[in-house]
Image (cartoon, rainbow, N blue to C red; front, side, top):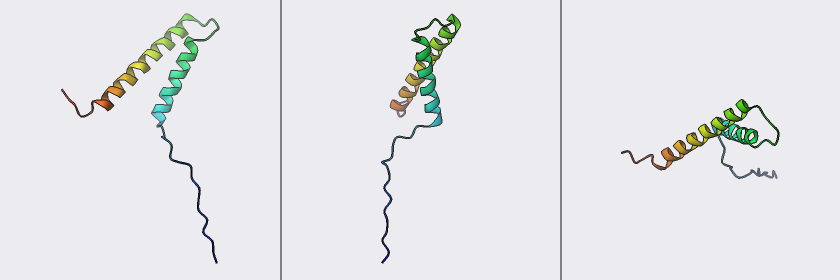
Length: 73
């Protein structure tokens, strides 16, 4: 008699796209630079702040289009 072996699989996780992983990595990196305990050049901190701002705006726009996708004024 041949016994069939069943494969045990992990439950499907919410798989993120490459775009979402890059966006999250940039957000973490910018926050790390902004809150760094060492003195960094002002231009580096300024770029990190603008990057964090741009990522926040991008996220707000994405959330707005996901929620209001059917409603067009």
